[in-house]
Image 1 (spheres, rainbow, N blue to C red):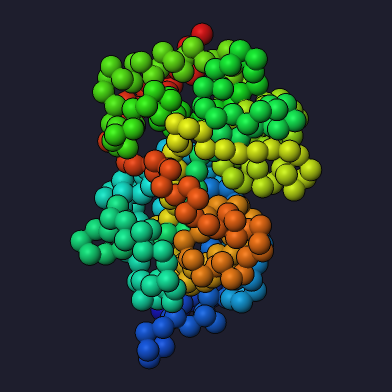
Image 2: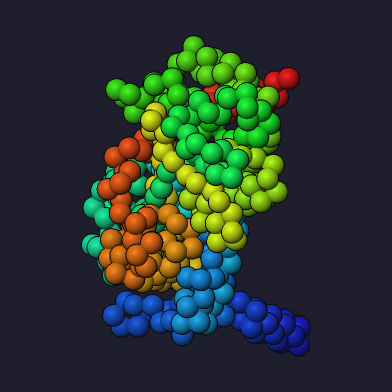
Length: 368
């Protein structure tokens, strides 16, 4: 019996040693309560985010500083993000980047951890209108760092569309039959609502439509189907359609225009007279993350003005720290001038009847 106990003890010690080699120890704190970065070396920070939010241009310096790896996994829609979180993703990912249409839902359903804002050295420098938004504040605790914001642009190929469009109704012009691309997302319902002027007196109207209104929107989206080349699911897919000259018009984000024009294309983006919807993305730490200390260091790092400037340079999205301006080129400073269109955007809000909106959108896609 004693020999058996000794053998079991040896096996246990070997197992512990093997596990320690393959799994870096959790970060410990010194007497001040601060994380010891040396304990994080060799770790991997997993980020589930929109395209462009884990670009090496701004993550490489963080990796080198702490001896870690930053791994980005991209999602294509807010619903995909929520689905991943509710199906085990909370353990697989450390940081997520939800937009303003689902951020509050994620907080209220306990999927993310509260942030220690005192550990984010630039917290007080974040733009107050973004920092103080109530959807990620619950019982006095803050659950999200404002990261980027921007418009859902009307993007057009200026080599094909010679006159700048001034209305979303250009999507319905028979001249562009089969040359339009919409995002595979319920936000197309908001788009039609804006075309119909639903939000002229009440911005929330787009996100709280009645059944009758939803059916009217559905009919218009189905009528537009001959115009549609394809519903894109990722920004990369939309980029490829513009590259291959499959489409001339689309709804999309500044990242597409910035990326393709660097390659010599001639894309333009506008906010039509009806206005445009917009999004505000936060960085949040999942409740089940095993790397919360490393995640907090990343949030502190990415909030720095110079890092934010790199994020803007990669994505062409507006960033939340105004101090980034001093690190921008003159062209990028034009993008950072938020006053040019912040007040013209109807920022996404939580859709209480999201299931119904998704039903309507799925009926549009399946219609013949």
